[in-house]
Image (cartoon, rainbow, N blue to C red; front, top):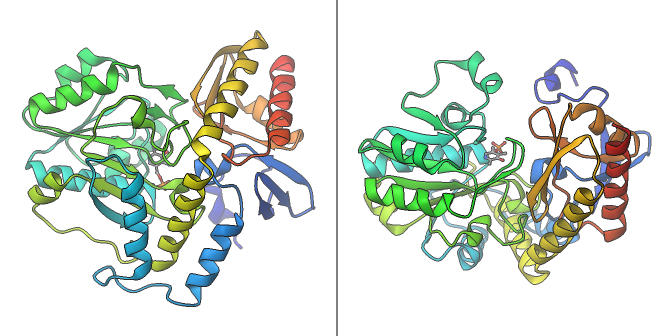
Length: 382
Ligand SMILES: *Cc1c(COP(=O)(O)O)cnc(C)c1O
């Protein structure tokens, strides 16, 4: 492969090349074993090559891989049924695509076409993807500037600031798009009052509330969906990352009311393909049967207590929800990530000064405590 072709996506220097994965373990091309506490930015809630995902894909591949989205398949019907059985009760319609960005693009298009309004209000430090519409809702300047002009009508307000949100939303606002826990932005959790206030502000102005659960969904935060903790009903929820156990997928869930008001057309050639749907059904079955959100809650809470208890002077704050954990440092995250990698633990950044942990929810306790100990060492030395 032309090495330059991958440089766009891969920032870490001397990143290992992986050849095999199982559970929370990855092996590189020299046979070295790593503990994966990044789970591919939250894709791997079920770990690598979960046997039930592998079996589902293998079986489906021998039956039917894909037919166009205008046709039904058993795999799609079963996945949609299963997804709606766990989804927030008010969301009864599912549009399937192939990534988080695509799920967000659909959400933005649905909101504009259902309300007949133009503006979208997003949050500072928010991340919603890198295609032009999703990127317009994304905050970071480095991600945006080289590609301007972006889609008109987007604005950003400080996260967790109710007054700023109230001021920004008006009679031309189609939607407010938020994360319950800002992942890429450095693991910032919405305050208890923020999402209920966003709901009320949207209701008062007729705007739709889009909740982006691409990173927080499917058990990661200690609930199946993070929004369950705020007891708020969004009009649209976006899902992707771990939804199909590692196979590319995106889903945009909406209410019947949004569907009824939607004037327009939107579709995706590969969206809802049988292979991804079979993987998605298997992933949902494992997550529900093994109640993985409970594991996320317990392992995450214990680890955060332990990390706070270290009292490491290099640490400014430890925050998170379940197994999305951010350790904000007084200095840069890169040296700590490097030290961890030398200890054979993979973690990821979240902005320049935050070390982010997104381990598989199935990570064995011995590997998780090894990783937390390694992080403790790196923080003490850092
Ligand atoms: C990763 C992410 C996206 C984009 O997903 P892709 O699959 O990379 O397009 C969107 N929103 C959130 C919250 C994410 O974490």
